[in-house]
Image (cartoon, rainbow, N blue to C red; front, side, top):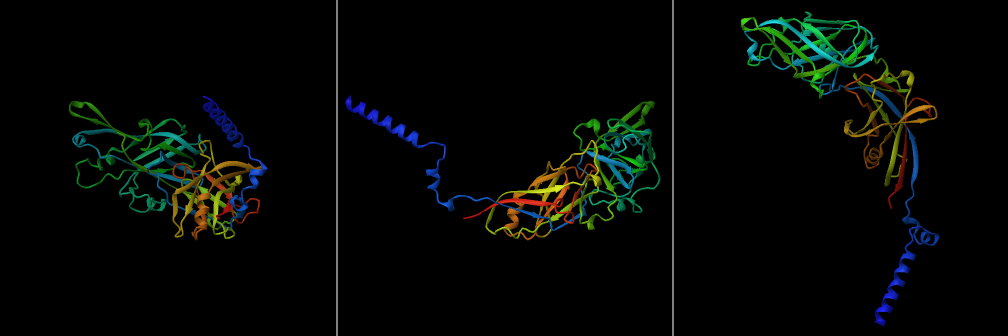
Length: 388
């Protein structure tokens, strides 16, 4: 029993010693035991853009939830809608009427301005996203005869508009069993001047927001039948003014809808080759006098990595955060992985900036470029350490 008691006392004393010696609070004695080379020293460097530009890009608009239609000054957006093939059962039936229903969900410009659009029968296949306004306007793309007119004194943002269509145009589309494709859909050509409306597209999750083709027929015995088609394909093609954007070094223009992206080049040769990048932040200062937005604007952008062959990697991206530096509004991007690739051998030191709603809106973000004053030009703040 005595030996057990002594062992218990010794074990208790040992635990007390261990607990007292394992304090979580560092002290000067412990710190001095670590050699200096085992401590990580974080250095910081700031570099400014050496070059910037703005370049047009062709974007895909087929999968977006908005179909943009209308004109605003020199900006315009045309639409294309192709409904699914009609059933063979309508062949012997006489048309009574046809109409196109569109649901508004967006506007850019004067929301209360008159809105008007002319409908034309499309004569060519248009599955590609490489369409431009010029290709839409080229001879033979659509029938110049108007097959429907929508003319509205004012259109709200949550209403359904109805445009009557020429039934003889619908007849030319044929039906599902036809061996030759003749249904190329509708061209929606804007004829107004002060607003661009956003209509719900086939990509909308709510069927009530999608385009609808409503056909009325007179069947046997004079009975009226209705066929509603709510499935199909659509896209819009927009254009607008950009007279000197690519050559303007003082500003970077990021335009949704057309679209334009900004490109910014940096020189990071001062960074050690064997540096570990802990964090890097890109800052862009906006010029509100040249920017355009509205209540629908998603105030956010994307930064993309660019490869040595000039390819923009849209899967390697960073989203913006907003802050203020003095009185200026600044957009920040976390780009540490970009910089790490740069110092590991990438020869391209370029970052591309695109709008978050590049394929579904018409906002313009104008940032100060490499040619602006030092306090306004794009800058990178990089936190790094040397790899031992």
